[in-house]
View: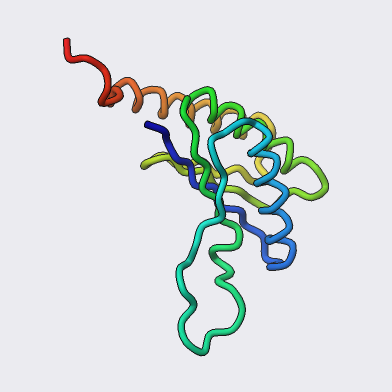
Length: 135
């Protein structure tokens, strides 16, 4: 059974946000994750114009190996953010763990990422896969 990560991109320009999420989606698919889909806000209410801005910058990433995938995904996002096209901030959420990558220094980002991965590792050890045999 695979895991999911929600990636929320923050940028005030809606057109740019759409482009940013498309670029990041392609880069994440190149990592070999199972799938990357845009979040759906559902049907627009009758009479509503345009799109749900909140859903434009949200990607759902499906993958199998949590720690390997998270490390690769975070690395790709950091590289993408440091490029000229990067967003203001990105939030990664797996279960109840959330990591926000923004304009913090490289050292601060490294520390936050290490803490995020350590929390995921502890969570994975505390909650083994259902397919594991009972001792």
